[in-house]
Length: 382
Image (cartoon, rainbow, N blue to C red; front, side, top):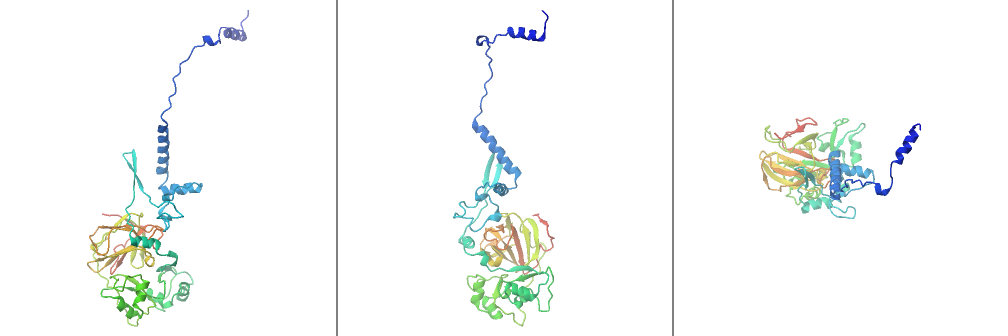
């Protein structure tokens, strides 16, 4: 018979036995399922790595989820979202804000560190005691095309003389577009407290009542003033005889140190201040040896929480927008002593007029040692 591919196939199939009894049992290795906790741990680690390396912080991660209609707890919100209603249990937010810094130890453990924060009765008062929308504040206004003293005074509901007196101008002065001027919240004038001043004397000089000055500036009593204080005299009238200003003391180049590392975010502005931007919670330090005069909490005419220190040469240093203070009035501090933490985050209690975390460093009675730095300069401790 002639062989063909079909016949060969049939012969081959005929030699095969498909019965069950002749089938050989094949031993295959059994797949062993690892502990489910192993897979859970691996997935958790990968998610954690994704969040840590894919986002600068947890608030960014939370914002991304919110865009997809997924919400995490309110404590993952950024500092700009902190309001006076965010710090305690309430009907709007069920969880107090506390954002710990996550640290990795030996590549196998994670723990959180929360910045130390003191909640005194003064802090609580600054959180709950004042409605910022109705607060008194000193404003720095930038002159626009077409502005006149009359139009600006009308817009802010103050007298023309108030603008002139607060900016050392006269009726013959000319406004320039882009010029920055100080606007008070009420008709009157500013007074910088110099050595020997009393509220009683100030009231007589500007023809107002003592109680009006004490009340408007939220002083405890008429003795509650210190050298370098800037106060508003509501309804005050500038006398014909010039009022002596605070003495400007010569300051050695090495008298002050840099109070905090960061970036110069605003050049000289009211009163004699430089802004240094850094993260909220960054420690800052006494710029020179001295005695703490004030540790003030609250709105404070828009300045927010602040500390003032009187130095040996009669100069006063001012530290604005702090979050937490580690000193109290009367404390003697040495150059470089830690005195507080940077605050000023938008909406934070005690931030005052501020749109971001920074230190407002002011000098009263002398030249600001940071005035020579250009905008954007990086400050580093030596």
